[in-house]
Length: 217
Ligand code: E4P
Image (cartoon, rainbow, N blue to C red; front, side, top):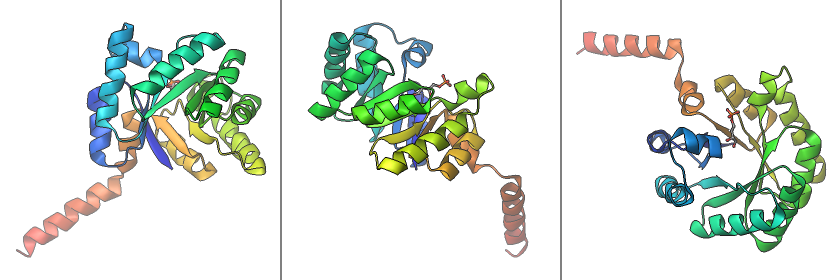
C-alpha cells in the first residue's frame, strides 16, 4: 500500500519523507490556498519545491473545466517534473481529457469521485489513479469505506490497472480499513500516518525495558 500525504505544507511533507514511508503527495486548490500559495507562478514554484522534497508522485490539480483548457493546463503541469500527476475532476470534460492524457502517456488522478459508476468511468478512460473521497462521504452519513470495497470489486473483476487512491482520509482507522479492503494508495494528513506509531503498551513496554536495563548496569 502506498502512503501519500494530503497537504501543500512543506514542513509536513519533509517530516513524512524523513520517516521513510512516503510514496507521494496530493494537493488541491484548497490545500494550496491554506498555505497562502496563490497565483500561477507561485503555485508552479511550489509544485517544484514539493517534487524536490519527495521522490514519489505529486498530484497537481487543474483549474480549468473545459476539455481544451484542461488539456493545456495539464500538459503544462506534466512538463514541470516527471513526478507530476495531473489531477482532473470527475466531470464529462475531465473524462475526455483523462482519455486524451492516457493516450499520450501522461499520468492522471481522477479526483472528486463519490460513486462506483464514476470510478468505473475513470478506469475506462485510463486514469492512473482514482480518488474516492471517503471522509466527505462519511460526513454526509454515507459509508465511504463501502465505496472503496465496491471499486475494489469492480476493478478486480475486469483487471483495470487504475489504482484506487483512498482520499479524504481523516484518521488512522481509515488507513487500516483501506489497507484491509485493498486500496492501492491512501492519502491523508500527517497525523493519519504518524498516528499509526502509537500504542500505550509500546510506551509502557519500552519504559520497563529501559528501567530494567538500567538496574542491571
Ligand atoms: C484528495 O486528493 C483531496 O486532496 C483530499 O483527500 C480531500 O480531503 P478532505 O475531504 O479532507 O478535504
